[in-house]
Image 1: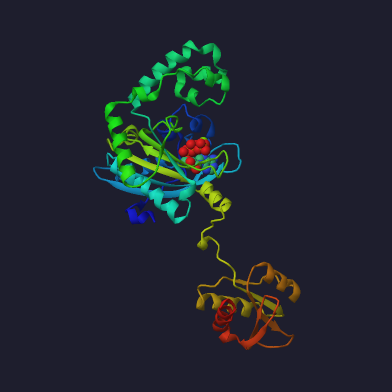
Image 2 (image 1 turned 90 degrees about the horizontal axis):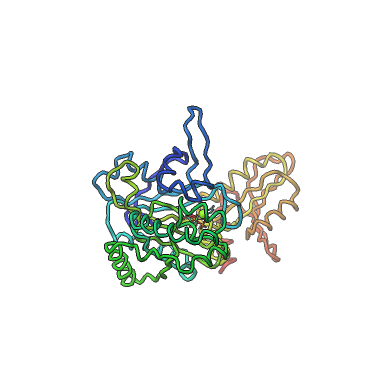
Length: 401
Ligand code: ATP
Ligand code: MG
């Protein structure tokens, strides 16, 4: 689907120098402080399994010269790794599908990126269960000024903070705002607001983005508390959230990251993108009973094999059915056993019919096999082996019509 928007696939490794993630995601973030799998390799280089896709994508795209003086629309998917407490929707290895667009200032491209997600939700029939949350977090300088004001404010409240919050006053005061401790939250009643530090140009961008979203009919909700846990973002950031998954409600997160390419050693290349947590999407589809058809190929035919030396013919026949009837799901019984136990497996597979190959001792190659309906009728018919694929399809057709 993303190809229809002109996005090209990019691949990059699951291992990178730890420094890449420290410089992009930020030293004082949950991901870098607590969640990375890092180790020294044989040369003594410190490497980490990638905890997210954007940093590696930028590194690879820049190294391959894709970001030099040009626009790029890239997508990727693959496993990511975070050392977190495993629970529903939160795993140590999970998968992200991401898109990144380079070389465009927005807000048009911001909307297009969001349209990719919107279209995906539509295709998966999930639009009704997802909310787009938006915020403007300004530039790095705005946030630095806000951070200074915040530090000043927090210093006046030091005695009301817990250890965690107190430690962050000078390292990452914005993180104190996310504290789950009610006492800390109580100390934040008249805390300065980021909005007051955001520069005019950024506000203009954000206003235009909202206008474009309105005219594109993309609904959103402003959430001034949305900051995202990664340092490279600036201006507009967003998350798609759902209340169908309990605490792990963020399905997709993204925004602009105009400074990242330059920060990692490339040129000044403006950028935006998002990452979708694939497992959370699948959980949503499951909980809403909306598993896409192609993910659930039903089994139509179960081929049983009774007697000696019939294995080869059974495998051949099952394959012949698959090749001649590509719409059908076919299981070929493996592992031997008595007819009744094979038939039981056939029932359990959900197949509508069984094809029965039965060879008596001493009998040479089988000329015919039976087709048996796996319902109460147990209707059975015998056919030449070569005709079985065709007959199976007819049999199934008659049973559904
Ligand atoms: P959360 O708030 O749930 O911790 P996050 O802000 O850390 O999420 P991002 O870094 O924005 O997550 O990653 C983008 C998406 O990847 C998330 O919206 C989520 O769907 C998914 N994701 C993040 N961490 C995990 C995980 N440990 N297991 C499964 N999916 C995850
Ligand atoms: Mg997280």
